[in-house]
Length: 206
Image (cartoon, rainbow, N blue to C red; front, side, top):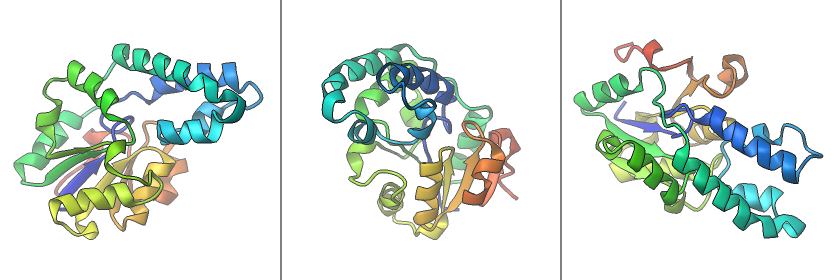
């Protein structure tokens, strides 16, 4: 391992349950005919969500939903996944590159920095949706991160929770560690090399 690449929601922060509540409310309002849609859109960028589910007659609702989402993200809780802080400190002490590779945009990250002023110091790079054109499950975002550090994909470990994110890491040819924070361990296991519930279960030497 020369680089550890982390998704954000459900991987660094235990925020996915909050997003499920938010998108559940939007989907019930605008797509009552599709119960459970909030689970299907996990891991998709806002651009993807709008393109797939809020086009045509619903395109006019995008501005409203964006305003709601921005307000929601300013006030939501950003609690680290259990064991993350100790794990990231151990990686950095061993000279391993660390990066966030997220489908979130820069305005969302400003909310993160507001809640966690120390956040930038934990990573050598932070890649957001503005840094790549093809979103997960395409491998582009993780390959971009590897290229930034000048390391081979086979030297990278990806930490993900969503199906699209796990597929992205596998498509990039990297070792994938799945966190069962959003989906069950059994459901994500076929897409992972390793599955853990949180970072307290990871033995770096092993």
